[in-house]
Image (cartoon, rainbow over all chains, first blue to last red; front, side, top):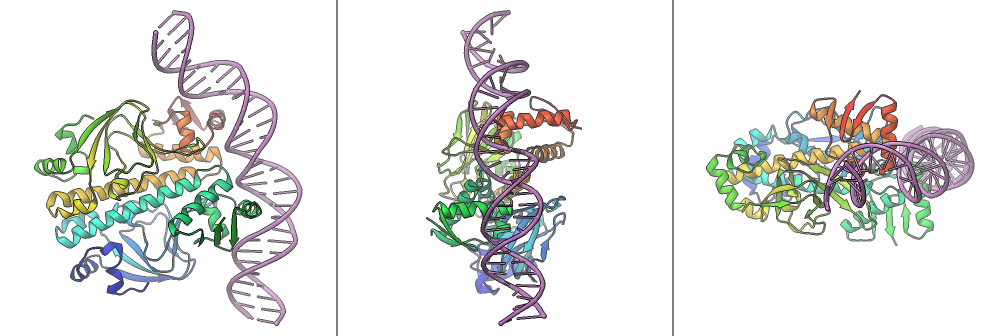
Length: 219
Length: 219
DNA sequence: TTAAAAATGTGGTTATAACAACATAATTTC
DNA sequence: GAAATTATGTTGTTATAACCACATTTTTAA
């Protein structure tokens, strides 16, 4: 995914907008591209941001690191996905999470300024833009509640299956890659890494799954 | 909170709208009030809804009940709060949760129809309405990720403290009521009820909290 | 290609939460 | 206000996940 006008008009954020409208929006949102190397920090918990990000290439993880060194991964956002839009829209809400580059990344930032400012432009393109933001927000909502279902089982196996099933469903195949390594999957499912490894081994032996690295097959 | 025009103009959904605009919106959204008795079901998992709800009085819980009888409470929505707006906006997304009346409730339903339809009215009031929906959705987002932080600690005490601290912070006091009884708090924190009771007892003995029913005090 | 580093897996031990069964307290209802 | 019902607390046991230390595999870099 590379950033040119052609690509952007396919992004959900500019859905239904004319090329001229996209130009206007891009200017009004003073969009800037930035690049990040793997493992570098894109946004830090505590920061206040008036911009949200679109992942042009690479992928990022949204995570929380508490003062005792516990990491919780809330989600992974891949190409074409958005992050921090909630914080950008709600003024003065400090981020509760870090956004990390999980690979080398190119990020396109859109400066919302504030919804107040955005809505003060009562014109067609900003109407469309806000509608699209609403869609993005609603989708993010679904995604967030998705994780709740992955975490709710009390057993390791239950969580792993809940997660893998939902990925399988989304990809429409019983064979797929996940965007996490073992430690990250453990952090996403709120489990201890070695306990997760152990359980994955058992699940293989029980003929439930095949695993190789981050490639999974449900049987 | 009783439903009259005066009250509705203070609701976040009609924020910034003129009385005439509210009238137009109410008509276009074909709003209907319904009442529910305690413990009755308002929306059922699997249902498809094109309406979202505003809690006029009472409060509702958003919960998931899996086929093994495990209940997970995702949130409690009180007076003035909204639910199912995500599902109403995203067409044909079947609900993954049940919405239950936690007390006798009066609910005002707004029929979105679809965002497509909503956005086809390019007029001032629908512009404002969509902006407000965006705010509601962003706030719901914050709320959902809030629960993630309550669940991420691995110990019972950690979860309880994470939850109580966040309630205390929101209410601006170290003394407050929570909208859950013991079983519900356990279901919200993904814990076993008796284990939660046990830990609350220890926390009292350790001088961390005072508890009486659903009234808590942090020390 | 080898050495170093990082990721993943394995086994044993311990801490802790789930579970079950029951006691007590609080609330409802008749 | 007594009985019934529901909610909450208590105790003991068991299952399981965390934790720790280390082995093995895979990846990276020299």
